[in-house]
Image (cartoon, rainbow over all chains, first blue to last red; front, side):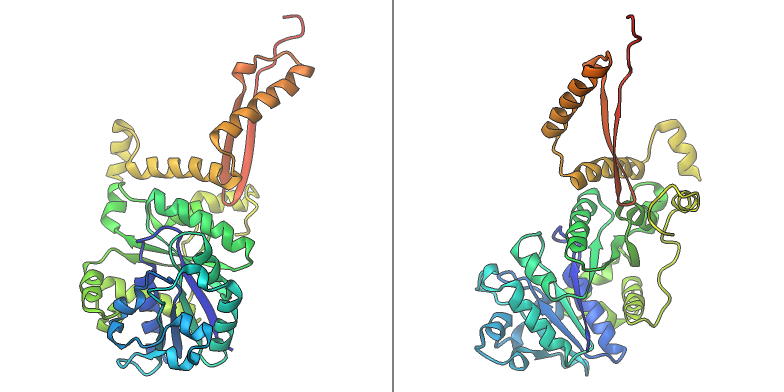
Length: 264
Length: 84
């Protein structure tokens, strides 16, 4: 049985879709079979980020409504052995799919694939509820900004209420801005959200260039962001030690002294 | 290091300001208490305290703080001496 992981954030534009595409490609490169589901019904984008937009015949709503089999709606990525995309519908409404629909779709896919990555729409309404319905675990993507972290915190609360364990990716972090005192560090973000860390992806021009071309950056391999995304994929697959130094010095002292309820 | 020294003289870095703002915003978000409700609660707490001790209802301070995912409500008030 495979694992279903939803990639979510609350706020739009923080890099959910790019993260989904790259983690999917990286996991496939590691030899796992991977299906990416675009759960953003009505505003599909994972197809263009993956460069597969010209090959869509059927989509997730067709598969759910039984207009085709799930297998038939999957688009095989020809650049890799093990990667498939289940695109969103561009014309349906978000409420044309229910959480139960998603749960059974994801369950069916988990039987045949190692990883099912679900690209969640922005927001916390119906589309979000659908996207998390079938997920075993969640990745919360946040950029080091007040608005993004605030929305991520809301999502963390909703995921906890739905019993979906979550881990954090801090996206678009700039070491020089952090050093200058003009950006929250990954440790700051972790301290505020009190979440386990999967990794911190650096701000990187190469992501824009590869996204323009419809190629996941990890396939071109050499950029700083691509390297971290590959590392995160390895951590997800259990091949690498989890990120350390995730909790601040004073928080750790606080925990050692029993000042905080969260275990160290 | 230089930033730490600099911020001693020029005030907080924007990173510290962001952290402070987030702690405050999240504390309120996590309780679901909007500003108006918080003031209502403050007035009710003041009324309850006034039944037992002499206080200045205007001087009651109410704060919501958050550490990790624990949220605390802090109410502080000075109490006037018996014969005042």
